[in-house]
Length: 447
Image (cartoon, rainbow, N blue to C red; front, top):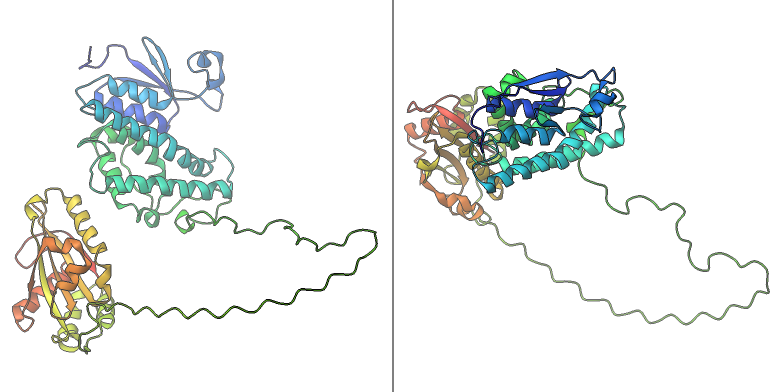
């Protein structure tokens, strides 16, 4: 029988104030509309080690859930129980397969994230002494786990399906204190999708009912004895064999035998004739690039990129210099790009990820190109467009370097036209809107 209403028995959750593990069940209860009374356990007075508590959890740990059928311990087991009390809220997914996915991400959190997080967090909270070796390892382990989440969330709003599930609740609860105290802006910069997902979740009413308003960390809190911020800790393990062996193997025959008569050494054999030198390998010719045969241009692309960057915040002021002093229309061309499938861009962050991925694939022309991509409209459909400065008079080098470029229509612009020049400036320097009045959802620069 599937419950569609909260159980009549008021369950009790035994824990202490601010226990992130208790948050898992509390948020699930908020989603399911279940009354969950929290009973404070005085850890300092060792109430969790008293016989009456150990009868509920022989491990002497919190949280513990008291139900009318008995007690449940271990935070994920408690959260699973509460989530399953109502099927219609779909905290455990909409199918058996999604239920399996939810369990996958809960187990991921237990084995890959939560342990590393606590090793890093507990010295900051004063729960245990700081150890530099364990700290560095935990920071790297957290980074590795967040990389897995980042890759998964790149094109997803939630971990499983299209709505919040227990997978999101468990992982967000585990990251709640790290996001508030440990993971500053420099650290989070590598994980924009994780940050977006986390903030999406904590701003849902059920999360806010338990967590309150969540503010992201701006300056990492360091444990006593720690002097290096996590964003400055280099990742990666040391190469095997990097250290020196203690003592080392001695060469055979290097030591003298004790005692005994010394025998005359046998004459050394004549040295063998030196082998004929091998022929020098033929030099491999460097393949020609798409711009190598073009006539020399008077325009210095690096000079333009510096001029543009140094004009901040008034980027538009650099355009007069660009047109009058820098641009060489014989050596460079300017192109308008329009994405061919804008009608499919119905989710804002996914459209931003689409553009970000496109720019990452443009590295092959970085020395010879400059441009901006804009995402117009504040709601679907989001329209992706861009204006690009390219070496030469053809767009083929871009199409060859970036396989995604074929999904755009490229139109060469007449740079002698004053209206075109105004449009180029508007796209390259846009902040809030485009000349046609469309509001900007996002814009990205390639330089």
